Image (cartoon, rainbow, N blue to C red; front, side):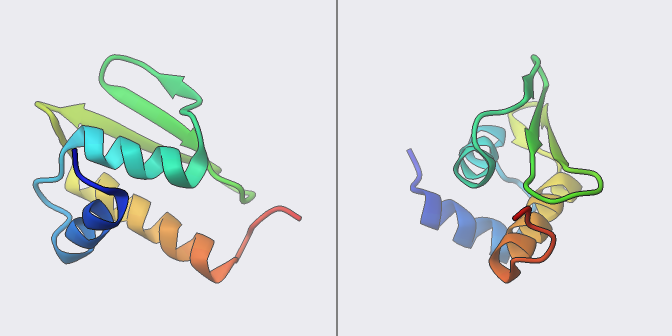
Length: 86
């Protein structure tokens, strides 16, 4: 099992070819349990207003690259603190 820091480093270097389960680990750490967890999708709630969700999809065991990039943007937004609820 990969550690969270190792996974984060990997997705920041190359958002392609990321395991869906690894991306789920990151999302669970950042956003908590998924709001919806269907067979091929997991939807996580984010702490800011607007469109407060991260939707990731399992495609043959891998996460889609554009969704990995969305998670990276959400991580960046969390680190900066923009849009967080008070």
